[in-house]
Image: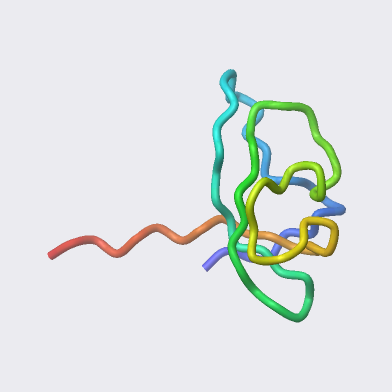
Length: 74
């Protein structure tokens, strides 16, 4: 599993992304853990401006991490 990344260190940008797209990540406010969507391909903004849909209020998100890969089917 990935390590938590502070929103003060970086946001989940994809700098090579030319088109905007929504990507889902795991988020936390330090108490709750949930999932959140953000737009890629635009310049960095505070998380509260990025979050379009999440389990936690965007202004309260402190850390995030990418979703894990799904299991391989057998």
